[in-house]
Image (cartoon, rainbow, N blue to C red; front, top):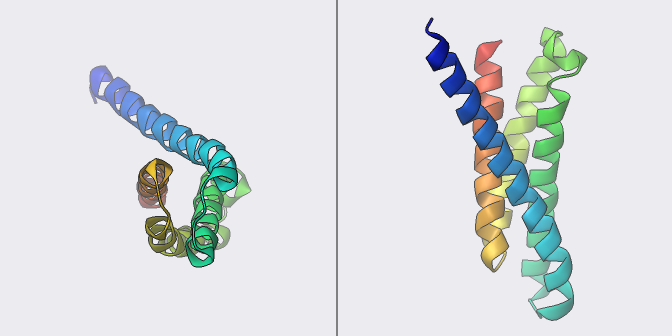
Amino acid sequence: MNFRHIVADVVVFGLMLLLAFWGLGYAWWHWRISLAKETLPLWRRTLGIVGLLAVSVQALLFLLSFTRIGSDYMLFGKWARWVDYTFLVAVPCVLAGKGKPRWWLLSASILLFVVCFFITLSA
């Protein structure tokens, strides 16, 4: 395998992770500020918070893949199912939210899901 391909893969993977975690951080920061300013209906605010928490759990699950879960096939299978569940909860809940952080949070959720999917394929 060519060294340039390996470097390109690492750079693309790193940029995906950087963008995903930046989007999640931006959503957390903006959500904290916007809750005091905007008057959203209760159902939208609730679904937005659930979506934000679901994407945060996705980020936590990504980080947990580097613990002993990655070497134990039973735990890895359970981990992969939780990644799917959190993604399926996050997308509709994030889309029910409002504002610019919604799109950053949606892109973070999709990027984290894709990265975790690639980790699942690599096992």
